[in-house]
Length: 235
Image (cartoon, rainbow, N blue to C red):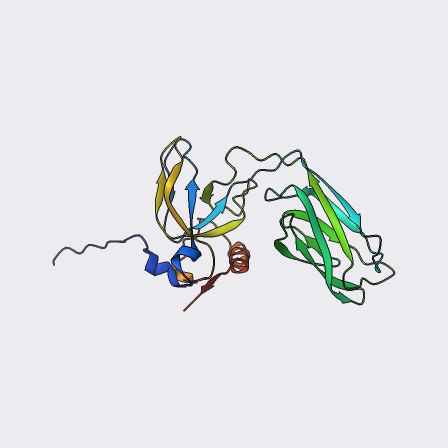
């Protein structure tokens, strides 16, 4: 019998990317954080995150004086995540309901962070729960959360592999690697890592998941990516 050999090749971009609006728009260059004691490696298809550490941060909340609803917002402990930005977050009622309602949350730059439901914890960037009051909320009712003292670490804005169990910013999906890249021990890779960032359609079986990731963590990551215009499909 002739010898039989099996070879496994790394995924290429065509294994991951099904469609993109335009490479100049859909892809973005990122600085890969230096390896720490070893080479830091990113493979095509891996979910990429950005480091951002917030510490010694305070978040104070104020309800608008003109609110119709008299429910209150209570900040969680901790009140912010590692992705928080310094400035004022606006939480505005967009879909009022009896004994409930939906609020749109925008960051200090005016970008949407997500929607918060009355009675449910909101846990992205700022963390809080809005309680129902005796008077229902009306459209336009708002709260403002002022974040001060954010201390961003020196490696903020550098790319690493997504890690859903982390607390340094790498738990927030930022994109999907379009190129393989390596950062040597102690040396950032300034050029060489391209990331699929917006208006792209990707194959689900092209995603390279970290070891030990759960189905629930995968589902959350895919939802976060889709909010950025990165859609993953099985076919």
